[in-house]
Amino acid sequence: MNTRMKIDIVSDVVCPWCAIGFKALEQALARVGDEVEADLHFQPFELNPQMPAGGQDIVEHLTEKYGSTPEQVERNGAAIRARGAALGFTFGKRSRTYNTFDAHRLLHWAGLEGRQVALKGALLQAYFTDGEDPGSHEVLVRLAGEVGLDSHRAREILASNTYADEVRARERFYQEQGIQSVPAVIINDRHLISGGQPVEVFEQALRQIAASA
Image 1 (cartoon, rainbow, N blue to C red):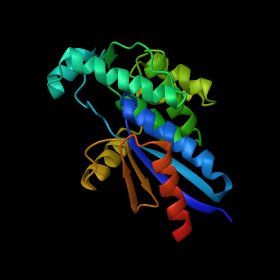
Image 2: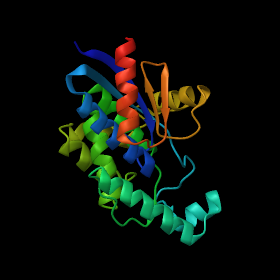
Image 3: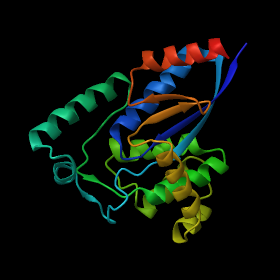
Image 4: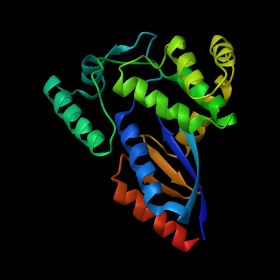
């Protein structure tokens, strides 16, 4: 008998550990198979809400924000690339980080259309693997079309403020719940798993929650 689970993933599309966490969760869900029927929802979190259009050099940004040295940035990048490779996800060359508010607006709409997981995956690949700007309306419209959404409607949404209030409300909600870093995976509104955990950690949590259901 399968157990239905609502899984909220609070994350950003320029957060490497969010990509790692999502891929690990996907593989954990594949391992538990028919035991768990997951209803995935991506919730918005902006690492850099003040980031201007056009973004900022990554090394410059990490140095300003965390006091990292270029050597630390390179070591962390190597660790992230290794974790990604182990999960079958490629972290390619990217030199900038970007504003993601419009991407979150489009993800909100994709959720209403039943295409949110597909769009999230496309956004992560576009930024981390291909080095594209997830704040670019042209990139966003193209990705929307590629995952089966209406490109014309995507362009209309991006040209307006549609879903801006909804995204800000969801961001506030999770901040008020104490979410200060991402990824944060929340199962059935009760169980929190923080960070880009290994597949085994997610698998164990899913099995334990299913067993207690």
